[in-house]
Image (cartoon, rainbow, N blue to C red; front, side, top):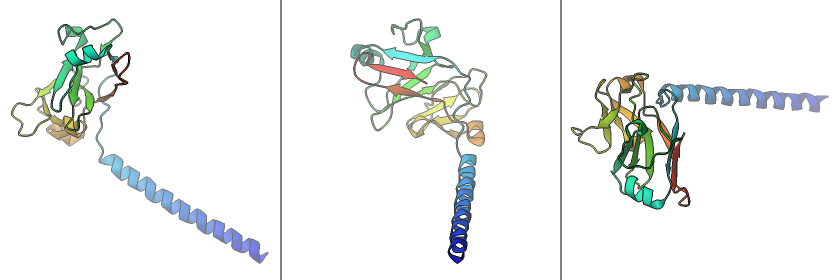
Length: 180
């Protein structure tokens, strides 16, 4: 009996220890969640942009750090891009850019603070740092080289970051695909 009792105490001790660890982990995740950025405020919209060939990418894509392109299918921007019927460029359009590490990244052009009203961001020509985009309506700024995090304005106060989309470049046909 003594052996079983001691086994039960060990199990009980292990369970209490596990509960404490779980409680600490949960508390830590809640604290971290409170300080995280909400980057999912843009209303859902079709995101499906295809670069069929390497030639399409060379003409309309980005190839160097700091380069960016804007895609708005409804306005046929950029001019001459071979849009197809099923392609979509998100809620406010797509911002395709090359980060300083040479990796392509894609954001929705819609300001998350102004959503659901459509207000597009644009390059902040007054910024002293590279990669800063500004909303012309609310004045919020976003750092596209830091995952679209807010830098100033009401988006920083509310912790609203830019909506990011995925880009896949398998290098075959199609050459590159942007989607949700």
